[in-house]
Length: 121
Image: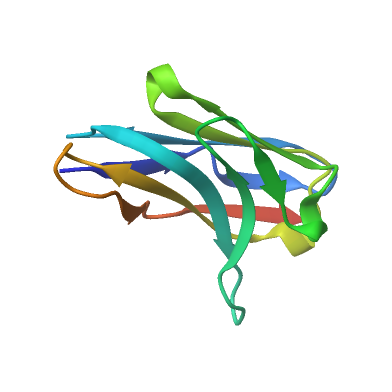
């Protein structure tokens, strides 16, 4: 079975930086798109950044210029470098990936359990 495990969350002061990692493991045939979402208390889950298998990226307006998403296909891992963090960035950050487990089946969306990022003012 496929699992996504996030790491790197924690508490940081405003203006600081964190790097999140999300590693996919298990029975993996292919990983297509990977993305980071976040959900703050009382708010909807929102897309933060995404990266295609070819390296094309996209960002939410709120994080452009501050966050960078990247991936290491050899490690089945996606990263989110977060700089100049603000209290508004406080949320649970979730990893998402489209992964196929077999050549006979199409890819499915998988979610990690989430990692808490808290930015203090």
